[in-house]
Image (cartoon, rainbow, N blue to C red):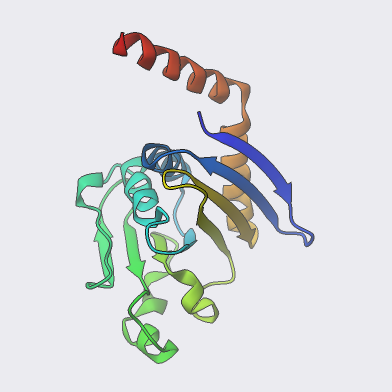
Length: 189
């Protein structure tokens, strides 16, 4: 089960904190987010190497109905696109050194009302990103656990964060998580 805590930011923006205990939980959270996306959202992923950014994108792709096995870090390709219920554009800014390089790959063209855009290493060039975006900051806690802070800037991102909060804090969701763990234990026996 994913432990959830919520926090309000000092400004009018909304924020949420999660503890994710495995890559599987990170992908599961991504699948849930993928199912909630409506088109036009920009997800800005921030975190050091190995923090779970690509695992999260793998889950988001699966939640959109795209084959999660096709998802890999686009560090050398820079931009990959996946087809699902909505198109998913997956961008990796890690290797880029300047804003001019980021602009030259067509970054601005990746933002539209019909697509979902997920950007790894988004903190490298925040001034080139839309102001309405959901930032997901992943941090190592232990070798297997991560914490994730979600911060919404803009009405579309706040709406998405509200849907995520409702889904992950609902009694039904908590009950399903406990039930899934119990079922998994029974199957293991």
